Length: 146
Image (cartoon, rainbow, N blue to C red; front, side, top):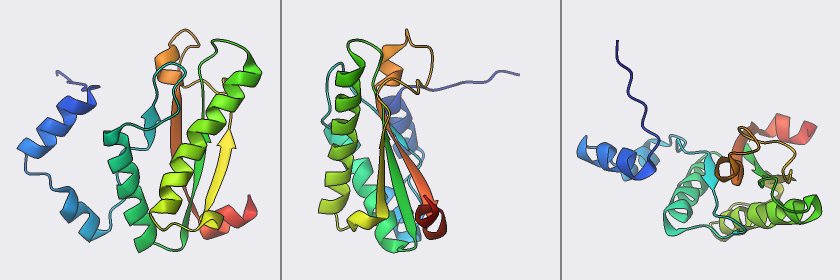
């Protein structure tokens, strides 16, 4: 058996469009967007246009499901001083929070955790994969407990 793994977001997006995928239908059905992890360039904390659009889709889902909250996890690679890495991960989470709030999501529904380089996604040497923000969905009960 052959398994094909696609790790190229642009290629995946093209394949989805070619197969008839329609994001407007997805949002009308109220399904949560698939993409939960957003990667950044070295020493960057701003979202690119594609990431911004996907975060807006998450905002649509959150508006349709007012009992759901999110926790935004910010991460950095291990290059440089940990104080700066923690600061950079906080800037990354703040960029996502700001966009969600602009899209109408109330701040109390958004929890933030900035980890610096303390929780790598993969090996520390794979710096590009570790520079990221992750969106974790929580029920209202879970969010209150936290």
